[in-house]
Length: 281
Length: 203
Image (tube, rainbow over the protein chains, first blue to last red):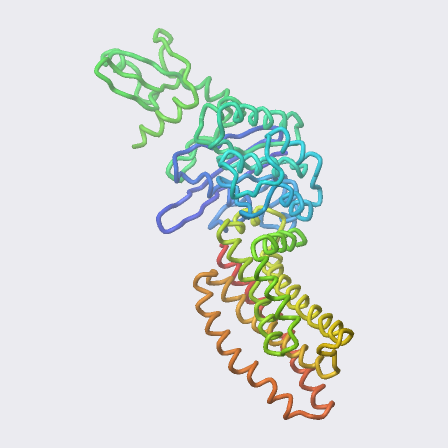
């Protein structure tokens, strides 16, 4: 079963259009949603959670149509972390536990307090006195404490120091050891996504550029560094993005479409995204 | 919806201690005007809760939780009802204790007066909440001030006159039953309207 499936998802605002987004996140996998600021990542997540009405398209989450009456009940099984942790400012972690215990039928109090300990979060300090990192950690603790099958995380690791980020990425990774668990994670930190994601979806200016397995992307694309004369030999259709410097040309190419005689370096996910985005400019 | 109620009650208890104390003191004073103010202050507590929600953008997070738009709206009405009911209970308890210790006594006339005041308070809540939910607290507050002034003039000042015009128990009973029914209908209509406005705002 797929954890998330979207088909032809569209949403138009006055100054922005999210156009025909098709995503498939298989159960047990982690998908990274990447794109520039304002590309449509948060809107996509809001459409998946049906908190914003789509203009067209279909969304199925854990086998349930997100517009059906069953979807509200299904939200019990979806842990969400938004770009900001919007808890009431005067609440402390203990209060959050009381609120969530009465919100989620499957709330696991012990698990929540375990995460508070693991993240070194104070129990009695008010939320307004938390640092951004602490706020995000509290939101992540909540998302992980109601036996979720799916985590939807919008910039959940931003604002965290590298040590904590690494620790949290390990937690997300462990979460998907259970093959019924899945994660949809958006982040600007592409290295984080490359570290843990099985699938990468790249949204650029409201359009889905690709949604593919990470390993397939890494196999498919490579980077060449050539003189201008040597670069001209490469078929144009093989070039997905290029950077011309005084010393020559650096380009993202489709490996299979380039002659074996040319040295092709490994492209990182960041390379792939940056070259394709720049080419579109 | 219990979670939403807990959240609001915890927030209000932490943020409006003085305000709540004020309501308790005014409910205890053996004077109908003071009690009316206590009830009106109580009906304004949902507005305070809405203002806190707006400041923390709670609605955005709550939309991701297993809550419907109707539950989000009804929880605010329930906070108002809980607050008004608390004022009423405190007022009855204060007068019952007053009777024991030689102060203002709990009389039979007090109950219809109390019921009418509670109905006026709940009607005020029914008028104000759709405005506050639909327009947001900042804009809605301007309209609320207007409604408050109108209510103070029309309802509170006229209440004693109305009671004196209907001296018989039967007529008083009809008046009270009508007030309760009108308040109930007004609140049901208000909840339906506020839920629609909330859905429109979220979409």
